[in-house]
Image (cartoon, rainbow over all chains, first blue to last red; front, side, top):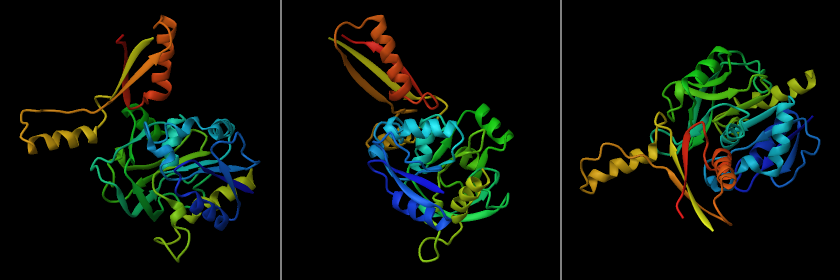
Amino acid sequence: MKVGVVTFPGSLDDVDARRAVALGGAEAVALWHGDHDLKGVDAVVLPGGFSYGDYLRCGAIARFAPVMTEVVAAARGGMPVLGVCNGFQILCESHLLPGALIRNDHRKFGCLDQRIAIENNATAWTSAYAAGQELTIVLKNGEGSYVADQHTLDQLEGEGRVVARYVGDNPNGSQRGIAGVTNEAGNVVGLMPHPEHAVEDLCGPGTDGLGFFTSVVAALQAA
Amino acid sequence: MARVVVDVMPKPEILDPQGKAVQGALPRLGFTGVSEVRQGKRFEIELEGEATDERLAQVREMAETLLSNPVIEDYAVRVVS
């Protein structure tokens, strides 16, 4: 199993994401934003950071990077794709996921250990968790407030496409406390907090994030 | 040469934290009586040749695909010279 991690100019968490992929049991493959090449990977992670300096809007320029042409086509074909933080923003800008991420309502960059509840454990990235299971993983963003129109929010809730929700105080003003969503097929997941920073006891708030990376291996083996 | 301006603004129903921050700063500077500030972006685009209907259609396409995110923003295109 090969899981690619894209590096854009300004990506920060690509190395941690590759480490998490390996700890999850897959081979991590570095992908480059400027290549029209997925190097034969079976799944893709878009990591956190500030791609293209967050110019214009977060993720707006990265969406048109050469590698994203391939990622979008593969995602529409069913390949598992996980976007974390800036990766979530890129997936929304790419229209692979509905809604958008705007500046936190309190206008500050937040960095904390955050509790979230997994609401949909039927996606390619969350099958290792029980429905309703609570995790503590790192949340660090300035523009993590999830917004969509009421119709879209109702549709997401009705179709069980809210993957994760914040537990306790809403850390960034996200509508309905949404921390992550998935597409209709469940292969594309966007998540604002960072599971790749919670995969080892040595650092971070524990290993609650590892399940995202073991889930995709299980999904690929079952496919 | 033609200059076309594209104004991009957050949709009215979308929270604008930057505008709120500016609004909050104004009274501290002694500017009172401001009930709301919304912050957007202005793009000045120089076109080669005339601003024909075809070229302006291209500018609207630019605005829809890159300059704005239609989920959270509205845009307006106007020719200024």
